[in-house]
Amino acid sequence: MDLNGYQGEAWENHMWGGVIFAGVLGLAYLAKLWGARNDTHGPVYGILLIASMGAMGYGAHIGGEKIHGTDPVNDLLVELKLLPEEESEDEVKDGDQGKVIKAPEDRLAYADVVVPILEAKCLACHGEGKDQKKKGGLLMDSWEGLLDGGEEAAALVPGDVKESFMIEVLHLPEDDDYHMPPPKKDQMEAHEIELLEWWVGILPDGEKQPEDKTLKELNAPQNIIDAAAKLVTPEELAAAKAAEEAAKKQAEDEATAKREAIEGALNALKQDELFKTSLMYVSQDSTNLEFTAVSLRKSLNDEGFKKLAPIADSLTTVKIGSTSISEGALLSELPKMKNLIRLDLSDMEIGSGSLEAVAQLPNLEWLNLHNTEVTDEGLLKLKTLSKLEKVYLWNSKATPEGAEALKKEIPELEFFFGSN
Image (cartoon, rainbow, N blue to C red; front, top):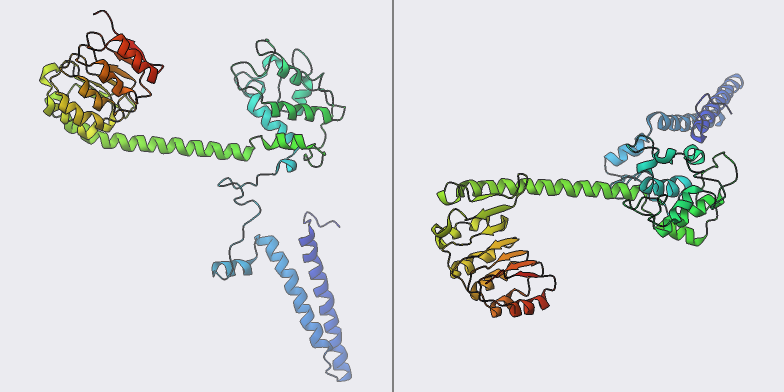
């Protein structure tokens, strides 16, 4: 029936509600006339009148739902908390994305399986609007583009896996000029190739794009269902991207807050003549600090070194070679600097005892012990520093034999003895 644009079962019910109302109301009117003419007052008129009111209410209720989009009575009950809110079909089925994640067998073969693979692995170079678009004259972001192919051959030959160039290039050696994706790009996974080959193979011969059907409707074998289950769905990609952006924003917010907190302590320290030029950020946008006592040398003593305690967590580089800091101050203050990556203790009057403090710096990668009293026995205290990469030991009491003993604990460690 032509309803002038108002199609659907609900609209048809609304129409029939109106027809029934008019019909029953007409009968009620005739019953009223019949009773008046015969001076009788039977129940027929009342019954018909009530029935007409019911028909009118039914039709009006459906019409109201279609016009306003909701059930006003139900909405009122929900608002009064007499009914729970209903979840719509489009609501939160996939975390915060508001989309239903389809089961593998319910995914459309082209739109939900093939297209995501092409988007992930091909369209950066073969998609319209990209900087490197249409490499080799090939566009892969549409059915027509796949059929047109590129400069070399037909990318897609429906039903023929061997003649489809888009499949052939996946199996070429990675050093072959025609291998796709290019060596520096993410390569196709085995399950992705399996899905593409299956899809090309089931396509009917001809240029007309077939109706997109689900894997279940296409009677896909179990190995294809399993392969589709390994794909990251568009919904999952969106969720991952949202999570990545949220994590990035959180990291930026934390870095900003940390920098603001550091600024106060740093500005206070810079009021002291010792730290005006010796304390600085590692880079403009970093929250990590570097302290270098190159210009201070012997004027930096235990008292001055202990003033760094408020910003100890933010120090990643400390160069205190040739200063007059004692081994006792090192033992008390260095363990507070848990994030130290580079530490220079060269030309200091310290021995192996100071390495007990150094051993408490889990992130240390670079250590200078040149011209100190450190011994082979002391070096072994560093065996727990798994990130340690380089140690400078020339003019110390340590020997190459002692270094080799430590190297057995940290195989990647390099030692530099220079010339004694």
